[in-house]
Length: 234
Image (cartoon, rainbow, N blue to C red; front, side, top):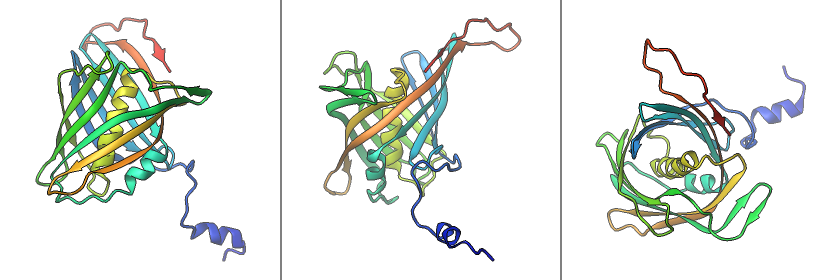
């Protein structure tokens, strides 16, 4: 019998420290192509209780990149509170930056300059609700310039999780990976959901801290020698 009252209280506590570690459950897989690069992303729960991580790779069959991108912040908690049912077969997610772009060592005034970002994601769920086809409207280089739409596929989705949360996180993760955001980068984002069946749009705003760890290397053809000189960016 446990004689320590503090241990007993901890065992039945309902609150969990945000920094507590947790198992890395796979939530969904995202596949898409940008220009000549093909991307494969696994959305994983953890490593901290308040964090989602994107682990994956990209390749143009000449060079392959392996990456690990994390995201956490109050925006994730707000997205988790938005109700979702599998009867919502179609919805649209609009994502934008608010006025401030912050970094752990200071605040940069004005919207954050970005080379590429996802402005909008149109989502159609499969009849079983465990997969989706997504059309991404991209922003490229110039502030108001739209690039060609990018088709993406979400598979292995866990219906117990929120598909809108997965889409919003993956959309921001694309920007984080392409721009190689360093740990401590904080984006203030506005996410709006347009639902079908005449429901009013839902909108949330919040901070999202993100960072990426990317390893570059040549694409090795099986049976051929690997060329040295791979570099790593943090």
